[in-house]
Image (cartoon, rainbow, N blue to C red):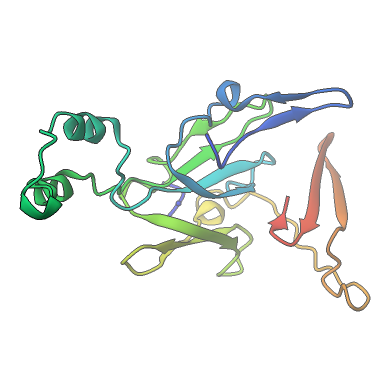
Length: 205
């Protein structure tokens, strides 16, 4: 276990000068249900970008089984216009909790769902998320904002499990007012491969 962590959120696209092709289904990331905070980064330090997606929404009313249940209820109202089965409707509404997703990237634009293997088996109601090297060991840790729960802090154990994994830390310093040098593009050539990062307000991309 490496960790001790579109339909709407992920729309992986292959772009060229004349076209834009949606390859989410081809890449294996098209069905993550309610999805928030897609974070693209190399979490296992293999040189390929991975994707983390925080997931779920509380009391999901459009779950297909729940919609079927609601559709089968009698459409009658009690005196005063109040429905007689409101309590039952609320009781049957799904909690919405589900595990977060993390997909391991590869060189062929396909991603493998590694959520359970990497330690994200616990159902939560996560929405906001961020990554950072919290313990300074060279791999990226994750923090999630969980509804009605403490924040989730996930330590990445890649460096402990694979001491031979390499990383590079670069600190950018720009001129005022852009002291963080937003917009910088970084290219790294290693082992015959090119790696690229763009410094943006939402993090490296």
